[in-house]
Image (cartoon, rainbow, N blue to C red; front, side):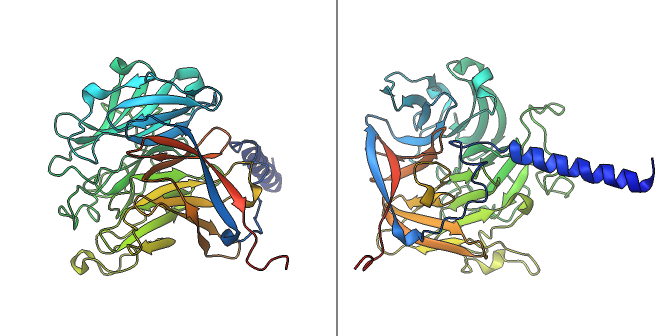
Length: 407
């Protein structure tokens, strides 16, 4: 075959792969693939959120995830997992009980994250993150739903000195790898200087391949992880320089990560990391958001990735609750909008990339008290949990015409 023909065949093969990749985009409510080029023309300031309470009686609900059969699983901090379906409501008995292995000795310890395996419909496998007995080690495990005795620990990180800053989100990326967030070790001021230390998993987002085993490890490290060949660095690390990213999410359309990282006392931040930004340094504890926090932790020549949105602690703000990108079909005007909140003020922050670059932001209302997690059902529609009241609320958007419109 001539070189010219080889190049032609290679080009056609490449185009075929690109076409197939578009066709195989995961569909969220049937809109993700069809609406991948959608650009809402409605300003965020013209949107507001409305919530409807659909379940009560939860015990400190902390994480939520949707299942292919329409159910939603809700993790309770003490180690139980409850099931909710919009047609039948909240099931009284837990579908999974991990209480005998979970350390809940501090306000921030407990069962922290839950996500189904991509092949959950066939395997019934869940991935969970929690602080384990006896000393609060950050723990990532997989477990068949309804079979806690078959739980398998995949990865741990010691975290005994302080009870706070445990991270705990787990989610699968579009690349098929599992992502897990960890806090910096607790207390305040990054006491172990973990954020900038590549030798520890504290203050990081980890990326591993849970579909294979490598040696004695029940997982493999993807060869494309940024620190695989860096001396002294943990190869599992995907991102670093985080304080307590206890809620992040993966956009099902473009695979980017949206991270809510809790600040020290000045700035709460939201980061938007594209799939090609593995290895990004998000700044802590050199920086808290964009301001310098600890000059001694700053290094000459190091590139820091700033948040795309940050807010201060005035007006009752205290702790960001990272959210999700709306990819549902009920409100096309909100499609592609990232929604987050604050645990104390309950304000709802909307952030959306602009086609020409940069980000549009707005406050679009309030959630019910103490929002701990924002998640989606299989259709991409939003729900929010409330901590101590133990509520589950459905979220929808309404369009509010600008002041003076129609006069």
